[in-house]
Image: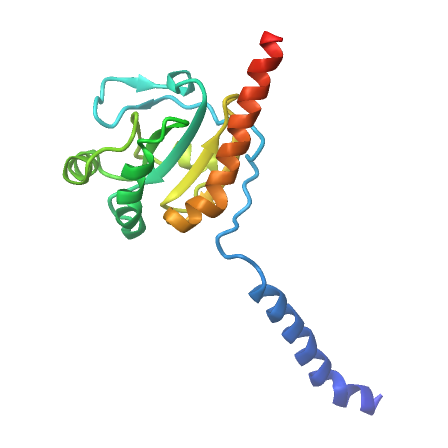
Length: 187
């Protein structure tokens, strides 16, 4: 019994080392979403630019959508904004914004100062849509397919490297799915 007690600290140290090693091998940006594969949650929010205009999922254009959650208080959002301006020109998808837990006037000034890449921006001042999406903070970006199903959630800053590695292959896959669906209905 005495010998077992002597080795107990060593056994605990080895177990702790295994756990730490396992933790280091995980991707910190990989935040699985319980909503992947499910419909985009219903919402009824005002448009940031036109407070009297109430928007719902019915206002999304048909096709592939990128929904970017951003805020003026988010330093990462400012960093990724020039890249959003660049990808907003891509005709394969529509880019939408969700202004998350922010002040309307500050957000309007932001878009005026840095330009507006979005088809429209939802004003989620109380964070309800963000909560329904499982948002931890900003920025986060969701890929929503032509059936309004969430196909990807990315928590973090979008840049060229992330785009090429994680978004471009998915966009190509979704475009192929759309093409296949169209050819099946025509043929």
